[in-house]
Length: 276
Image (cartoon, rainbow, N blue to C red; front, side, top):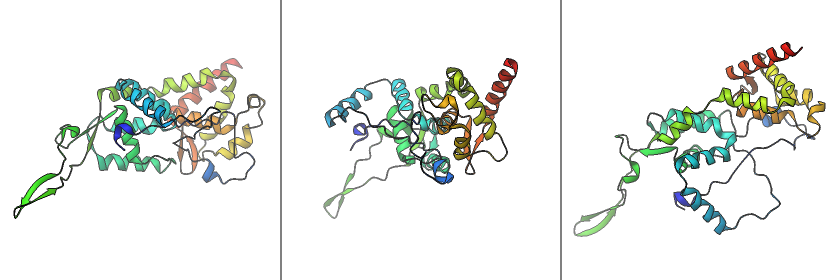
């Protein structure tokens, strides 16, 4: 399978209206860890045919890099922070080994079906990263075909050892990094769902404690709130949204508030006080 043949399945986490663990007593350590990959949702329509997948892949490959990058971020929303982290680190060329280590370290606090190599592959195929040599030459232009050598009058094919890949963020990828404004995205999230402001506030307040919080604790506290009954929602949905928007972080097996989350909590508290 070539790079262009690889098809990026759309994986999107969505727990807005279903909690598959609600009837089971599951250990917090297993349920709280963020699943960076998301889950596939069954659709009533048939799965696409192989020809349809190939056609979709070819159509996407023909799109400008900015479009492909935006599509990648749409398809991998739960991994947004990781994608941006890699792109930011690669604003200056970085050796493959160093970037793989960064991704591996990040994944220690986030379950994922994606390997570091697959994350890099997706970013490269979308046009967010380019491959260089250590000297800064275009890796794609290297001649890595086996060389013909003659030993004692006999021809042999001698393989070429490829140099280490250095990853570098493309101009289109750099625009995505520069345009990432998590504070604006978080404000937009909360303001777009005013009916859940008290839920967001409670999640942030509990995560702001020195001991942090867990999904089980927040579920016991919030899942029976009237505002979450129709449509049916669960605490884990709001934890996921706040984590996706960089207001929460999974650390030491607990959900904890970030600096960005504290700013949002301060604003929410001030607004509640002014309305009282």
